[in-house]
Length: 219
Length: 219
Figure 1 (cartoon, rainbow over the protein chains, first blue to last red):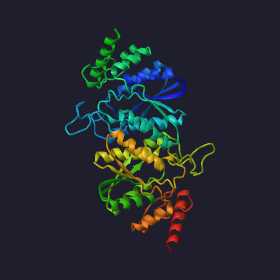
Figure 2 (cartoon, rainbow over the protein chains, first blue to last red):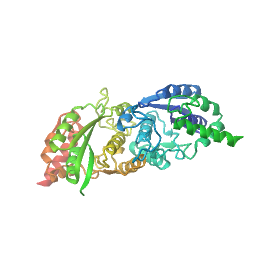
Figure 3 (cartoon, each protein chain N blue to C red):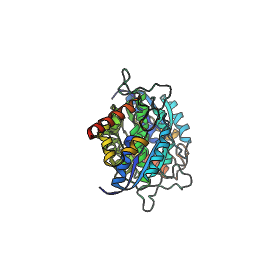
């Protein structure tokens, strides 16, 4: 598929950086959009800007801090401990911002439409979705229809990582020739440490397990 | 239908005030939520608060000014003339905030969920939708599914005015015993004048035509 312009919802983490290079392969002009929403790890934005510059794509940020006022959760509320476990009686881990991807994608679509962009890429994965309903395939497909109906346009949401686990995502980065860039330059760690990260938070553990699995499979 | 709690997306205009009283008839506990988003007519909020108080329902506001930064349009950008006509080469009148109802309803859903409310009411009407795709029935139904999938919940979006024109909406207000309240206390006018309004803006003309039609039909 060679097409026109595409917007990547871009955090500067492993998943969306892999998507950024996937976008570069499949589209003529790539726009990376990073959201600022009062998350603890604001360093993400700096990291994202650097990766986008090195990749030679357009880069922009949008402040949607309002999202962090909608629900109480540990990614934006520093008074809560970071905990991936599902709280007693709760459905989701407390890093969950309810409907976060709904707002990210909706804002991205309006932003894209203003610029004549109708392809959107998000790095969500149902395989590693950690219990977040807004990372699932059925949600993204339903949202695609809803965005089309909301604005009378025809968007196309691409989810290249939807059915990949972390090892498969490392494999894709390698296939795209950017394994080292993704390994060394991206920030996935909940404690804000780029590259291999703190090694102990849930995001680091998931990322490392995937990398080890991929490297073992490769050799 | 007698049910539990309901949230009304409430502007203090004719349509949403009629919906507020419809909600009072059908639900035990009614919450009115008014959005502040940098619209010219901020007086709406004051009017909305007064109507909600008189109706004896919960009232709250939420600032989602970010919506007004997403697209250039005359409802939030004072440098543009107010014009309901569809601009040359454009699909929609320039009062259109692209995807506005997408954001209103999404924020309303997250707000409601935090409070254990899963019924939502909006006063949109496909009959009088003035070319806005996000007022159409298919959009609202698609959005309902998308919200459910986004949050793993089961919302129910009610649209009591969907198939009513302005005359039918006046008829509903009369049926609910609040014709005078809706006529005298609400604000629909683009120039910020409550009740019968300025009489010359497109919203006033539409509202008056509907009232005259309903009153002629009644007698």
